[in-house]
Amino acid sequence: MERLPITAAGHAKLEAELKNLKGNARPQVIQAIATAREHGDLSENAEYHAAKEQQSLIEGRIAELEDKLGRSEIIDVSAISGKQIKFGATVLLVDEDTDEEITYQIVGEDESNIEEGLLSLKAPLARALLNKEQGDSVEVTTPGGSKAYEVLDVKYI
Picture: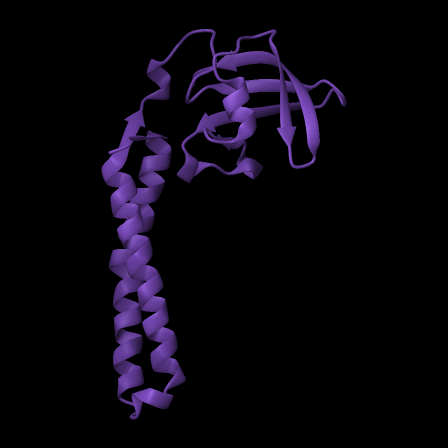
């Protein structure tokens, strides 16, 4: 069974989503199915079919979250130190073409959000950055073409 690295914050976020699905979404869809059943003929009842489809999506997401949480390995980023980029590192980069500085934290796949600066461990840039140090340059092939970055700083916070 493959372990999934995740930060404590990412794990808490997945647990909160699971709790919401089980405590709110699931009971609401069960009620919607019961209400739709009261309307009679189920074969032509669009509300019933929509509620059943929603129930299927909710149950699928619950199963997915339970699996991921069961396989997750919480990494305490604050306990990591060093100069090399590893999981959990917050990395300050400069685009060598535009001199634009960007900061990313390398996190688990399920907690990544590029707008928030959370870069998936499986992203091409993150894979290229692993084991690099301050001052190193990396070149990454992205959907938009090849990009070159220099590592300005590596922190574990």
